[in-house]
Image (cartoon, rainbow, N blue to C red; front, top):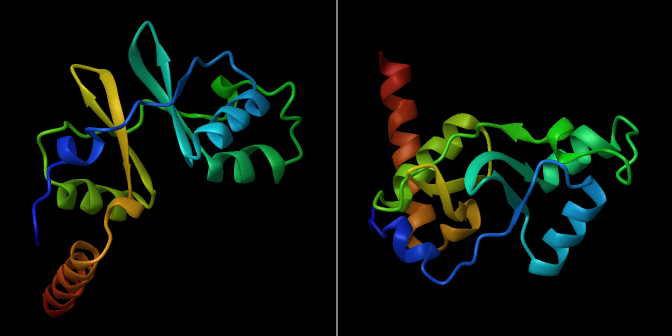
Length: 143
């Protein structure tokens, strides 16, 4: 599998961030304006959580919470798994596959640098990744 570095993928990104006291409505407006599916929740410059479009759907709208009055701190994923920028995209894809999520923060010394998502894996990388997963599943089945 090609090993594009995460640093290369996020090199043109400006992280979309919010504090935990932001309302879900404000967070969704920020995400929509930036055309992203997730934002990083930070406190004093350090990553403390992640809030995604799936969180908005499953943790806010589906249970009937009011986005105007629900704070990110109530519905975000606290202390999310993150990757360092020097790792290859395949590493992040593997962690996302195992964890069942589509976005992963990129941090260095706890400070957010950007975000990778499954959308970053297009073309050859995603085909190779699927092939690798199939091979791993065959090995696991054989054992």
